[in-house]
Image 1: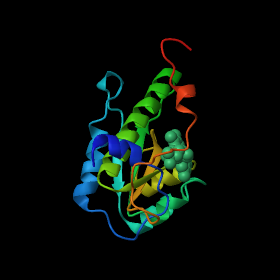
Image 2: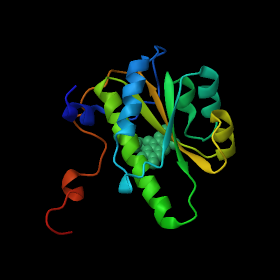
Image 3: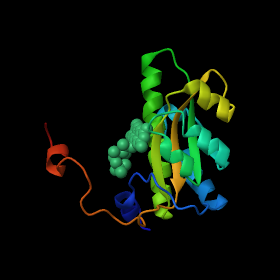
Image 4: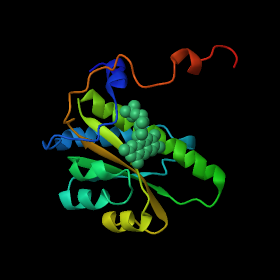
Length: 171
Ligand SMILES: Cc1cc2nc3c(=O)[nH]c(=O)nc-3n(C[C@H](O)[C@H](O)[C@H](O)COP(=O)(O)O)c2cc1C
């Protein structure tokens, strides 16, 4: 897919075909996160690629919006250090968002769907993934081929009117 098509085709996919995603494709998706920019190039993140069905099922219970992870071919968990101070915490969230989106667009480019999930139960998520206590499992990304329809550029995305959002020169 062309970059512009991948950007327009990405959508949250929460229902997946049972087919596996090739390791090379998972590697590329994770590499897109690895290549993402971060404040000061700190890269205070780790990504855990999960394909084990029991782990995926267990991860689907860590948040009320994580149900789709159970049926995903794979998931990538984004792990970040815990911060006491507000500023590094905010920057970390920004950095994680960039990595997430890079991985999602890279997946869309391959025709592979992705779906975000937050994480509520940190203790459970850490236990499932063997993450140390001074880190959080910040987000999960479910990965798999869409069960409903292939990814195609979306002509009319569910967004606020573009002229209301994109302003020119001033508010
Ligand atoms: C920070 C963040 C957290 C999200 N958490 C969840 C979640 O826990 N479960 C879920 O199903 N979707 C989650 N989403 C997906 C959003 O609901 C979705 O991106 C939004 O509705 C726009 O839809 P689209 O991605 O299909 O364009 C999250 C998205 C973001 C950016």
